Amino acid sequence: MQLPAQRLAALSAVLAFAFSFSAEAARIRPSWHDGRSPHHCDRAESGHVFPFLKWLRDSLSEAVLGHSSTSAKDTTKLSKVALQSRYQNDVVIRFNVTNSEEEGALSQATEQMLLDVWTFTPEYVDIRLHKEDVSSLLTLLPASLQPSVLIPDMAAAVRATYPSKTAASIRFDATTSDPAALRTALDGLGNIFFRDYQPLSVITSWMRYINAMFPTITEMTSIGKSYEGRDIFAMRIGSPKGDGPVTVPRKTILVTGGLHGREWISISTVNYLLSSVVTAFDKEPMITKLLQHFDIVFIPVLNPDGYDYTWESDRLWRKSRQQTKMRFCRGLDIDHAFGYEWKSTKHQTDPCSESYGGDQPFQSVEASELAKWAKNETEHDVKFVGFLDLHSYSQQILFPYTYSCAVDPPNRENLEELAVGLAKAIRLSSGEAYSVNSACEGAVARVYSASNSLPRIETGGGSMLDWFYHELQARYSYQIKLRDTGSYGFLLPSENIVPTGQEMLNALKYFGDYLLGNNGIEKFPILQKSDQDSVGWKDDLRKRRR
Image 1 (spheres, helix red, strand yellow):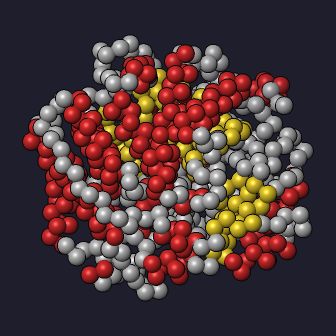
Image 2: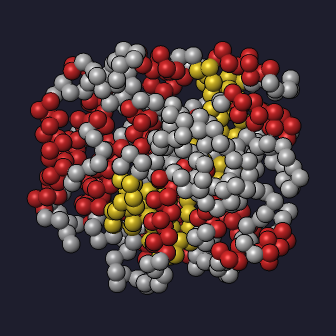
Image 3: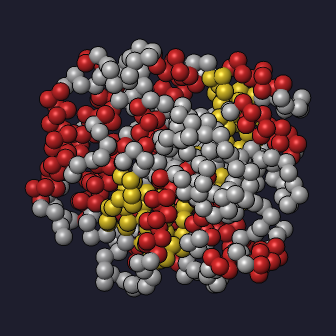
């Protein structure tokens, strides 16, 4: 059903005004003293210098777009004083790891000191820590491990990721239902939306706007609630019924972002893909054909509590905001909270650890809600055939399994073939190099065996990647770590939003083209839980070891 012209016009005006106002309010940063609540701010500095305009914007947005579970505090940012106090003595350092012994020593040291491991690849490990802790860390490491400094001024790097410029408002005529005019309108708003990283409530409004503008091919829904009660919104995109072949079960590709709160580029990239796919339908033949055969579900923010917290209090917050058994160590690593092979590797039991996934599978509310939604989808004529989980950073394309390298996925050859194709599509579009690896590999590429007890930088049990691949049979499942390779890490400047989105759009097109060529389904038997636990299943897995 098409929206009335008057509502579309109001909708466009509200969104243009809301984005413009949000950007202006973002320029006026709040400040608070140490020990005071971030919400206890001077009125003139809190972004509420225009209370009537703020009330008008929020009221109109709710009337046209509907109520958002996220409060109107979306423009609240960390002040310069708070940033300087929180991050001024932190640095990010890199270790070039060359052998398993070095990785084992580094793993034990980071666990002992509860350090924040930013990323690891087969060549290097990046760690954030206090400057004064560097010497203590080095005493626990072999002399061959000497760090280089990647980010010497954390406060400046953090500050640069928040919006600081006023976005110009835009106007367009949305009184027509003509698809070309709607695309032009959406492109105009996109010029503002993708200029900066956006807070949670603006993302929610953006998704509602797209759903209202393109109701025949989009469906916005909540897959569940976060620990703090926020909706986890998803957008399903597919061709209208009767427009192309309809298959049962409906083959579906799932694209997710924001599993870790601080990985802002993953969220903006999912939004970029969502917007691009919508506007390309009936315009680009490949995207149109893809949507005629597949539905694509986009979930930009899987961890809304953690993401909102990065705007309100701590830009570098990684986990959820769920309460743990230790009062002063909140949050679970959602990517270590899924049920498949949860205990297959050394489990992180310290709630203060950045990789703590809970004391039992699916203890994370967000992981549990996603799993329940996905299983319910499969019970209602949905078949997940592709899964792209976007993260940052290090420019890697990772395929299952995460929990162990002792077992190969049944279609490993196809997984590697497609991964290499995705990397090539990115390289041809932007020149950026993405490496292809098995997600099981630690900081050093090596062959794992049952007798190998050397610790890895981060254990891989309970990953979302493995769960979707094995439990839901999403045979083309990948975790993609986006830009960059360490110059900025999680603090990638907003100038990279559009280039990164364009890279992944080319990768998504290649992904879809590959699935269309193979009909999207590998010919493997569907394994039941009873089969997985049987001796025959274990024997079959052992045959696939390297």
